[in-house]
Length: 80
Image (cartoon, rainbow, N blue to C red; front, side, top):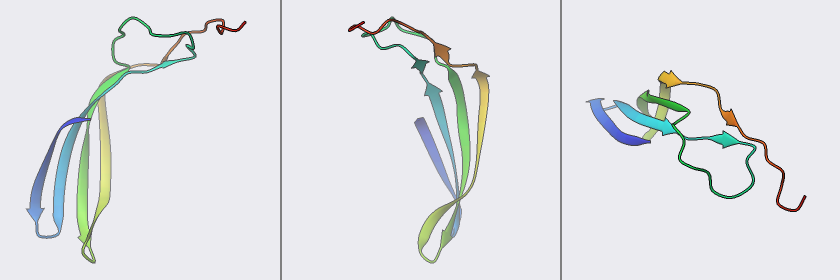
């Protein structure tokens, strides 16, 4: 998560936009991998409400204009 921008709309409401880049590889167990492209790039749009003095998440939407499946790499474990 990066570049979160919170905007206070009123005394009891705020909105936030946060950007994300997710890097993920499943199944690989043998050390470091060469750099990969992100699996997903997008942003969240959140709305917060103040209820009894606490700020609560009222709604959240995620937008993934660049996304795909998780890369799966299988290897033979080192002990095999």
